[in-house]
Image (tube, rainbow, N blue to C red; front, side):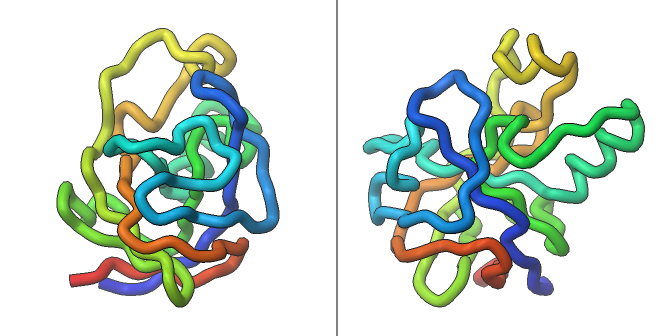
Length: 146
């Protein structure tokens, strides 16, 4: 299915906020990303989004939306995330395994929509549970596991 790489890692201390980019982070099994408000015992511990989708929105809308501003945790480039359905798994770096629990979500007037007038997570975001944690860094390889 090909390989991609981590374009960026973003966190925020609470839900409902735009996220800030970090160079690296600790992904915790059964929780999510350390110091991120979406961590916890539920199915949406980590959100992944395609970097190419962000680039496309920026070009089409003449915007400059940066990593974290769609409220995603991990931007992945070079991999067609649409091929990863519910139950699919992403391997990141050496140790991290995420399982997709949901593709998209209910669209509501979120901070992203209010700030930019456009949103991506409700339509193509991958919401994941952490099956195996570890350290994640920008540039780490990402692949879809069969």
